[in-house]
Amino acid sequence: MSTPEFRLRPATEADRTYLARLLYLTDVFGDESRPVSDNFAEDLGTYVDAWSPDQGGVIALSPQGVPAGGVWLRAGVDHRPVFGLVETALPELAIAVEGRFAGHGLGGALVDAALDLARTAGHPGVSLAVDDGNDRARRLYLRHGFQTVEHRGGLDCEVMVHRF
Image (cartoon, one colour):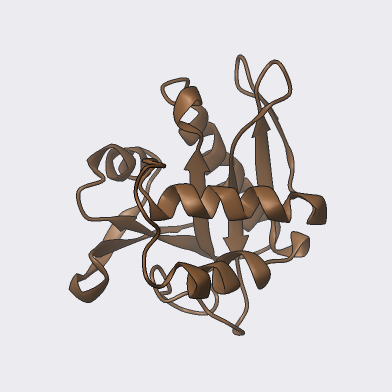
């Protein structure tokens, strides 16, 4: 799996620290000068600590081998994420791209990789949450076949689903 410039590889247990960084980037909307949200520690437990490689994930590497972003799936019923949870049969997709690597089509390649992982694992689709105001990501998800299923005003996000 690769994009024209980037190489994609399966996420492993050794990537857990990098997944925590990616979750941090989603929490601060890519602006590392912002403080983390009040619930970041809880989200870290849900999205990273409760993740395991068998749930699926992909890490993108730059041509120089530098981690450039990643995507991972959270499945199961324990520690279920609250943002994009629709039903237990649909794992939730979490994704982030390092700011310096934005604009290279990496987000689309990572979404495609997550869809392939979910399909191969026999899931009927995937869900995700996109923050209000993140129109660039929302357009990306729409292009990849996601549909809005609800708006969660208390969480300031839109829940989207891609079914196979």
